[in-house]
Length: 170
Image (tube, rainbow, N blue to C red; front, side, top):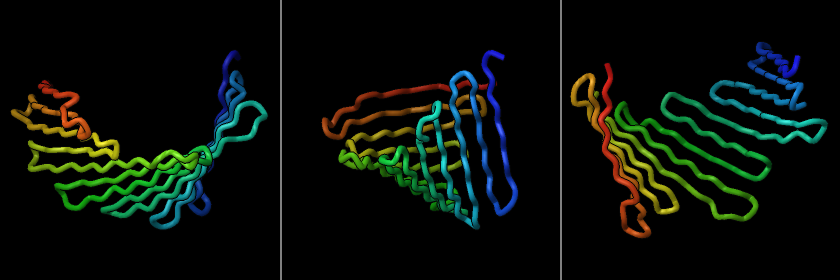
């Protein structure tokens, strides 16, 4: 056996799910554990190479019908907080904030999607780096979809990219 991976899984008692994997060639171990209680999920993920110290990531999520909120700590220094909210059947919104405890400035992204009907939708993404992405799709026929998109640098007041697409399906 040149390269083997052994995997074990556990799920059951008290809404706990655990997975562990070991790769013989890389001598790497990974494990995940998630505990669910009502609308909350709490998880930890670990990676370890050889006999070193494991790198651990932690996450907490809250899920309800119209909203999901997550917080994640990666590598002990990168924090991500996100909120996704379905305001209506036609409107989806989201906000994501990233922060590095090493001292760099926080970054944020605000996004939204609006479906006018079953054939037409608009999406936007606004970043704290003053970038704006816009997309428009319209189904011309069941087999043909038109897409228009642009990426705008708001600092420079110029479009970085403009795109048009036609998607054909059989």
